[in-house]
Image (cartoon, rainbow, N blue to C red; front, side, top):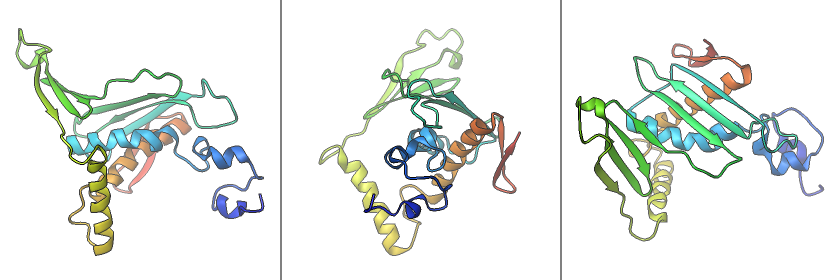
Length: 214
């Protein structure tokens, strides 16, 4: 179209003829997007990294395929990723499907309890491993509900205000979410994506800060 500089839009991506599908549905192509992992899973993994005080993963892989929308896209519409963290850290699985509306439980499973995220907070359930013969197994022992004032947007507006203030001041010390948290989350989803595209288990190389085959 006359109103669009297509070559500028493509930037460093491979040069291809004008394609309305690529323009409007750019998230569906590896040339411009990291797919479900960077669009959606990044939000799930970030809160887990923060809660569990994790850094970069040790190993990771992604798996999936195009099951529903075979419309020329090259990014899978159903995708899952698995991560293992160093020093016997947790194993994290993030599962997603774009062809079914039934949601999956978002939780942290431990050998003493399970924390289940339920908006607007979470619940903690006991695990029988915590006490052999525990008759309270599966009982909800704690409930937390985040109470907001000024509507549901208040929490997110606060983070935006905090972020903008840091940009204006040039200081990151008062950020609600430190820059390193973003690095850890992006490292995690990229390890999985590289594993999917190479059809291999991938390893995060801490020394070089790069992703290599395991």
